[in-house]
Every structure is written in structure tokens, then in C-alpha cells.
Length: 378
Image (cartoon, rainbow, N blue to C red):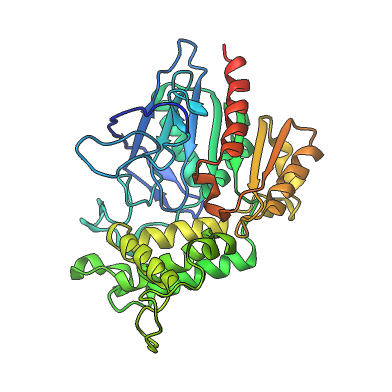
């Protein structure tokens, strides 16, 4: 990895009094959005890049928090001075989405209408709603047009939605390891994870806060299921294979026998300590709902007819959750509309998690593309 860290950073909370009309028909307000920014906005306000986060990430894209151990931003290997998204050239914005558990208004906060914690009563939010809220952040910052919107996985869906619904407000859309909608298999994985949570006796219909408990068992299983889908078979074989935890069989149906079991339990335990159960339900449902072609009779090319941005899409050969074939669907729809599109299909062994890792070919693609953007800045 080349470049430097942006160093210690501090989040900022933006308060919005005007209610946000949600796709579900409900409205939410007042609400707060937690953001972080890196680099400097240039005099023409033309170098802003919005980074959209995926399921369990947040506004904390890069840098560190002073006095806290192991708190690097989730895309710190990509964003910073001299890195592919160079904060010496770009003003980078990270926004924590509504419904999250990392600072923006969500199920863990108090509903001002009732004086009680929202819990399961927090309204369902969609990718459309998140993008509408991000637009308000840009308005608050005085940014009328973005140099680029960048996101991976669920973040890539938000980047695509920006290009479809606010075409006049961005120059470039960069969507990594994403899809135009979830397959039935992906929806199935999300549903199994949700059922693990809602059937936990400590869930209490989503109002577990009032009972002073957390549905950790459900969260652990949900994370274990999700984590399996983020890794490739090759990576699991290389890291763990059939290696035994103690070096010999224990002949137990309930104790940990294999290293891969130990790893998944560790990931589940860690996740259940910091992630909110209602947030997990909300975000996975937002994933399920995203489908821009639905409003066009299933015709993805028709859905992209409104887009005006230039596009970069990237996928990874071993990503079976958001496979290259799904990115190629998007590329075809863009080509059908005679839009400017670049596509990179990267041979990487890491599965879906590859978009978070420091692969030199992947970072080389992004570096070259952002250099192209920087060359066109006013």
C-alpha cells in the first residue's frame, strides 16, 4: 500500500429538522446524520467525492480516532494522501446512513413522537432514502455537483442510484462488487440471517432495549452466515482447510472441532458486541428492495436511460455473492444507452471481501481512474 494516512479525524453530526419522505410512505424527522470529511474542497467546489458504505461499515472511511486502538477507517487502504483516492486532490465525504448504529438516527435512538427508543418501530429505509438523505448533506455543505460517487457492495447500489436519480449532480459513478438487484439466493441468505435474529428469545419483537438485553445469539448466527458468503472457497481452504482446533478429533457434536468453526464463532462474537439487531434487519431489507429495473418492467437498459455520468465498474472473479456476471449486466445496460463505461474484472482469490482489500491490480484500476477524474477538474 502506498500513500499516507489522513491521520486522526473527528466525525460531525448534522441535524435536519425537515422530515425526510421515505419510499415506504412514512416520513422521518427530525433526524441526524453523522459524517466525516477528508482533504480540502477546492475553490470551484468541483473535487468532492462521496463514499457510500456497505452493510456493517459507516461514515468512518479513513484515518484514525485519537486514543482508540484498532480504529482505522474501513477503506483506509484506499483513501488518503497519495492513495488511489488521493485526499491531496479530492475532498472525500463519508455519511453514516439512516437506520445505522454508528451515530446517525436509527433504532437505538429515541423517537421524539413517543419519548421511547425507536426499536422495531423505526421506519423501513431503502437505498433511495439513503441517497435522498445524502443529497441533503451535500446541500448543507454547499456542493451542487460531485466529481464522483464511489461505493462497494451495498455502497455500489447507492452509487448507481445516484447516477439514475440525480444525474445532474455527479460526473462519475464508481460501483465496485455490486449488482443491479439481489438474486433469489442472496435474498434467501438475508432471510435466514434475519430469522436467526428475530427468533432469538432476547429479541422481544425488536424492543429488546426496554428489557436490558441484546439478541446476541441471533446476531452471532447472522454474522456467521454472512461471513461465509463474503469469502471464497479458495480463501477458506487456504486459511483453514480441514485443520483441527486441537490437533485431534474430540468426537463432539457441539464443541469446536475445526479451525473454520473457531474463526466463524470469533467473527460472530465480535459482531454481536457492536452491531444493532434492528439495524441488521433494516439494512438487509434495503439490499433486498434495491431493483431499479422494477419500475421499468424489468428492463435494466430502460432504467439507465436517465443516467449521464461516466462509469467505472469492477468485479472479482471469486465473488460468488455479487458475481462478475451481475456487473456485466450493468455494463450492458450502460452500453445500450451509449454511456461512457469502463469495466475491470479482477482475478482475485478473496471472494466478495476483495473490494476491501489491498489488491495491487484493483487499486491500480482505481488509482488510474481517479487520476483521470483529477485531470478533468476545474
